Image (cartoon, rainbow, N blue to C red; front, side):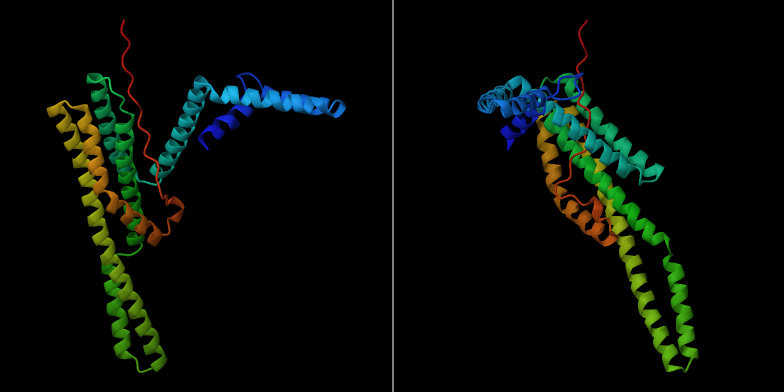
Length: 277
């Protein structure tokens, strides 16, 4: 599929300033001329095949295609992140931006002291940021559910229904009130589970923040750029269980539109080395 992608791009290649790919015009021209002279169809097919193979095999053309696809993927990722951030309150947005800034600064510091390609490290940090963002989104969803009613108000309703249940002799009313108690007890249980989940999420958010600081401090001490990749990989492995937990909570909250089997990493900007004057 890799080479076929280049062939497809070559077929539809359109120089800047042209509305229609010139290859389309050539194909259409041979198609029309071939109606008068069928032999031209064979000639056109040979020329088209030669053109596609020559262009698609060009290293320069392949680099241009790869760069374009990377830019489109990066733009799509940024749009996804902005869409998710818009669902958070200002405090959580700021919390995410602060961690993103720390990761970006870490890459910049490494770029200033090392000439190695940091794209792998940027992708690794981007994945950590994506998990962090999904934790914030999940917490926001749980808070919305819990904000609909407090545990205290549910306890008051349970007390009221119990009082009604004791004061009535009607079998039908007793049955209805008993059903209400079961529902209220289930709601109370869900609220208690929600508070436990919020504590877990906060612990995971703090853990990611501290891991990023640990990586930064370790780099400052060792000065070894390769240690960045190893440490990021180690942290990423420990977050596998957290990622699965997040997906389960999203399913429970009905946020299935956001579920991704292989979520893209947050796209961090690659630092540019200052030009020498």
